[in-house]
Image 1: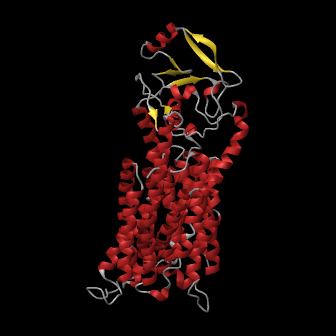
Image 2 (image 1 turned 60 degrees about the vertical axis):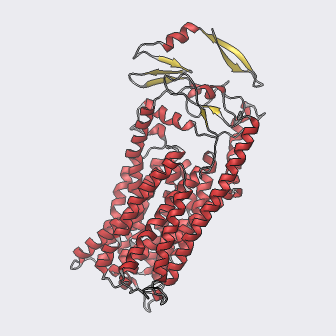
Image 3 (image 1 turned 180 degrees about the horizontal axis):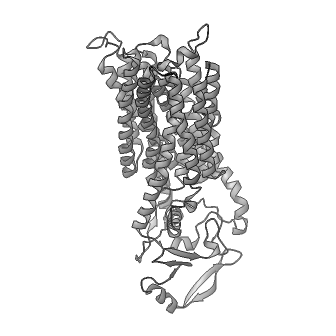
Length: 571
C-alpha cells in the first residue's frame, strides 16, 4: 500500500488515504491508448486529452499542496513530466510561427510609422510645413515630441498584466495606424508635432512585448525571440527606405505630394493589422487557440521549472493569499535598489542615443554626403538589412552560449569604431587626410555603427528580463529599463543639427563615446553579477544545497528525477 500524505493545520504531514500497489502497477503497465493516472493527472496518450483535479488547475492549490507560503510543495519536488522533448519543441515552434512572427510584423509597422519621418523630410515635407519666418528646430521638435510622449507613457508596458493581450494589442495598433495616416494631412509643423505626440503614446505600450514573451518562453530562449521581434526595426528601416525610393519615383508627377503619400501608404496597413491582432494574439499560453488541450498543459509545465520561490518559513498556507499582494509590492520596490537593474538601464540609455537618431537622420546624412534624394533613400537600406540578418545570428548564438555580455560588448565596440571613423573623417591629421563628404569609407562605416547598436538593444532587453526573479520584478525591471533608457532619444534626436553638415562630427563623436561606455558598463555589470552568483553558490554549499535546489521533472519513461538549478544571474 502507498500512503498519500496531506498536511495538518500546522504543516505536519499526516496520512490521509492510501492507494494500493496493484493500482500503481496497473497504471505503470497500461497498454498504449489506455488512460494513465500519474500524480493526480489523468492523460489519454492517443488524444492528448486530460482531466485534472480542481486543485491542479492553473493558479489554484488546494489543501495539502504547500508546506508554507513561498516554499515548494513536496508534490512539485517529486512530480514527473507528462510530456517528452518532441512535444515541447512542437509547442515552442507553434509560438514562434504564430505569435513571435506576428508580433515582429506589428513592430515592423510600428517602427515604420515612427521612423519614416526621416524619409518624408527629404521628400519635401520640410519645405511644405516650414513656418514663416522659418525655424531650424521644427524638425527636431517633431522627432523629439514622439519620444517625450513615449517616455511619459512607458508605464503602459505594465498593462500587459492587467488588460487582456488581444484587446490591448489591437487597441495600440489601431491607435498608431490612424495617427500615422493622419500625418499625411498635416498643414504645418505644430500639427505634425501634435500627431507625433499621439503616435508616441500609442507605441509606448507596445514596448512591453519582450516582457509579454517571457510568459511563453524560457530564460534561455528569450534572446532569440526578442531578436526576431526587435529585428523588425532594421527590417522596417530597410523597407521604409526602399518604399520611400519607390514612392518618390512614382509620385514625381502625381497629384499628391510624395511625403504625404508616403505617410498614407505606410500608415494604413497598421489599421488592417489591428483587426488581425484581436484574433491572433493570445492572452496567455492557456488561451492560445492553436494549441490543443495537452499542448496548453505542456506550455504551462515547461515554464514551472524556472519559477523561483522566495522562502518565508513560518507563514501558514492560510495566509498565503493575503500576503501575495504584499510580496508583489515588495518585489517591485526591490528593483529600485538593485544595482543590476540600474546598470542595465544605463546601458540602454546610452544605446538609445544611437538607436533613436541614426534611423531618422541617416537619409539626411546621406544627402549631405552629396547623394540626391532618391539615391539617399536607396543607400539607407543596406546597413539595416545587414543589421537584421546579424541580429538574428547574434541572438541565436547568445541563447546557445547562455551568455549576453561577451557578444554585447563586441557589438558595442564595433559600433563605437564605426562612429569614430565618421567622427574623425574631417580631421586633417588622418593618414589619408580628411575624407570627402561622399567618401565610400564614410558610407561603409555606417554598417558597423548600425549593426552594433541594433544588436546591443536586443541583448540588453533580454538580459534585463533574464536577470529579474519572478513576474513582479520582471515587470518593474522592464519598466525601469524603458523609462531610463528611453530618455536617450531626447539627447539622440538633437545630435545632428543642420549646421553640422556634412560631417556631423559632434553627433558622431557623442555616439562613439556612448557605445564605448556601453562596452565598459557591460563589463562592470558582468563582473558584479558573477560575484553575486559566486556568493550564492557559497551560501548554497554551506547549506548543503537543500534550500535552493529542487527535484525537477523527469522525462516520460525515466526512473530518476533531475535537480533543477537555483536562480542565478545570466552573464
